Image 1 (tube, helix red, strand yellow):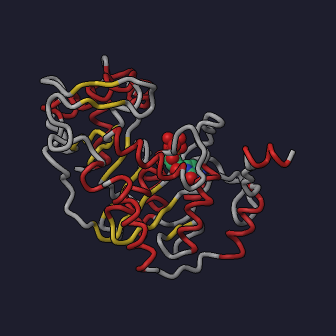
Image 2 (image 1 turned 60 degrees about the vertical axis):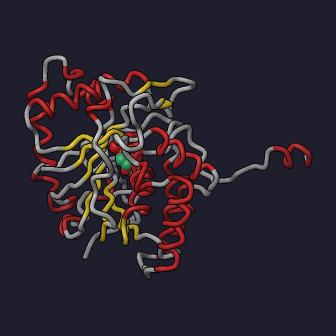
Image 3 (image 1 turned 90 degrees about the vertical axis):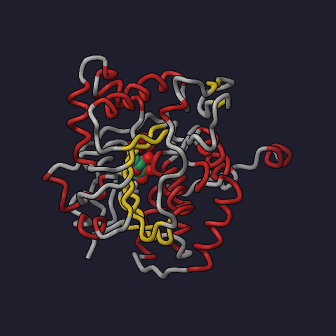
Length: 310
Ligand code: CDP
């Protein structure tokens, strides 16, 4: 038995209840730790070069470059005449970004009144084209500078853009003139919907700028967290964005990260702030990720908002 333990050390994740209790004990007390922030930015720069690599650019992906899909085994796409013109020249962001708000989609945002706080950030990052309608403004704000879009959303919500390009373009208007960040080269079936989304926006002179997530960056961030005990098949979108923000921003606050069904007040919490559709089990390891984020909160490296905003 000892031997077995030695080969496969048992990794025990605290129970959800223990995590909730620990957060309650700690409260939202937070003290910024500049050394911690600098240290983390350095670690992320060394592993993943977010400034240079987070998006596919003409600079990091010239013609002929082989892009290896990060979510598939041994699949690649070579940059050619068809794809190269769709890439931005280089990282388009004015760096460093100052105060960043990363907004996850957790139900904990409901009635949080965090909208104003979020909108006060210099750069707001959101996940998966979330709803920003009037009903939610007070809790999640209105501003967006970068929003991720999974190709599967384009497929399901917009019928793969085969006949509903207008509905797609119209529904993108709530994100103003932000960057739309799509993992076009993560899974093979995601490439075509992503390219179609690019053309739908370009053909209508939309204010949004498409950025394709660089699969090399996504892979290196995945490895970074694997080395820190996040064992999911794939990181959640939110953790990718937090990692990006830690690499690009001077200060990061995260909202809407709470993958538990009970809140700090022991009342039930829905999975999203807009619905209660649960994720496909075992694909992500959100509680595991939360433990990591909470460690960073405790060390003053980023701030987690898990309750109401003042
Ligand atoms: O695409 P994915 O299922 O990862 O994300 P989502 O459900 O659209 O939510 C966006 C992000 O918010 C997730 O990737 C998580 O990082 C975070 N989240 C959370 O921490 N707790 C929840 N209850 C829901 C989402």
